Image 1 (tube, each protein chain N blue to C red):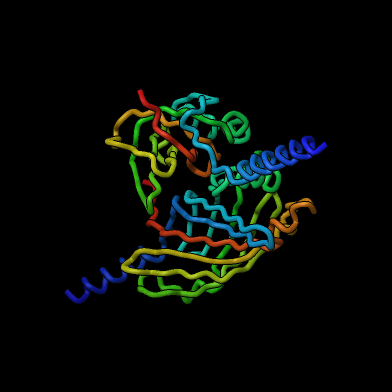
Image 2 (cartoon, chains in turn brown, orange):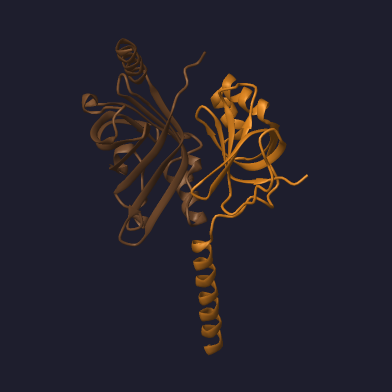
Length: 184
Length: 135
């Protein structure tokens, strides 16, 4: 009987190690707080995957899926700044630097660092950001906040509206992950 | 002379009013807009899987009316999504419904037509500001 329990534990541990988690309802919001105007956009259909074995993290989001309060904000965002018909997606591909501290089979909040390549507006930059992975009753969620300087991504703001758009835009991401079923 | 000034002033106020209105205009609903493209969920996913760039040329940023079989209807924090099956069991057309849209008794297995703005392809094709097309 004891052996059986040990075997079962070993087996479940094995499964836990090889797991990938995904979400197609990741939320990405950005906040531009400039002297003249506050602008925020929200996307609720980002895709993301975390590989618990390797610590690989991926995010993808469609630029034209961001929602705004005002129509003009949405138009300017897509046409003038993000040029979303040429660059329809933003992507992140990276890794959890300190994966060892995360125990995916134990409830808790794990503060990690994630480093990787962030692609916005066709420009790719290496970024590192802290993130929080929360495990609760087997459910995995993650969130992070970081800022990007829009000039780094070759997003040009005309002088005339320089007071309306922040040079650094704050980005918040959050996702509740589901276990990815292995493809049979 | 005074009249001219008054008229100019009035025009200025009207102009400012229109400017203010335009500036604050909320994102327009697509419900009354005619679809730019009509297609089935299978056609859209097949186009994206064959050549994403070419498919973006046809669908991205356009008002697309898609017809397909409902896989699931979800609601999370007030955001409803009607997800349509495609010929690929791993890929869906995810239609994010416009805030406040009623999805009525639409359920898995129903054939529906949904109109929305195509925001592109991740591993699924996503439409935003979607509304149900009444038959």
